Image (cartoon, rainbow, N blue to C red):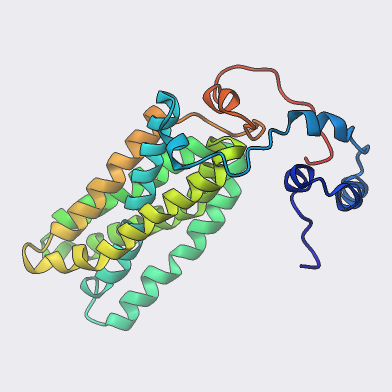
Length: 265
């Protein structure tokens, strides 16, 4: 309430000129930028409050594909993350050490992703984390030799590392893939898919009673498919400005002039 400013776009759409001027002047002062011409932003702002809906995530085709890929990836990321946490008891004889290991591995995963996100890019890093989680889980599931139990533990922890990294990236990447009018709808719908994955995670973990490798194979297979879909069907968003309309969102990843810095940078 005291530290974060209101969204300038929301202030423009609501005609709150006085608060808009105060916030923008503060942004310019902090970022050592010139105060922008607010009329330019008013002209570009399309007040679509109440008009955008979930159906806008399903059209045109490029946005539909993007939505389906992200829905699936949120689902498998959440399922893999919590499924591996639920399966922690199979790593070692001591459940407390198991749980500690799968939780501690999240810390370096987040630091690595924060470091690489603006250097390597969103798509390759997200895809790599999903593939790491997928392949590691599949390998761990296929190891049934007791003498190789240490390798199974390492692979399972690598899987949790990848799943944690995916969790750190997916929120940022989703917000950058969709235009302003449906951005919050996209994140909300994707988050709903993630909760479905979380609901299924304990059930998947319990499938070890049917066949011991089955949980890790399901979790790993889903994450690996998600990573492949990311690398083949999603554009890179690193270094591009947030799309304000559907046309800009569709053109993401295509060559276009680099936007000049402004007060919001």
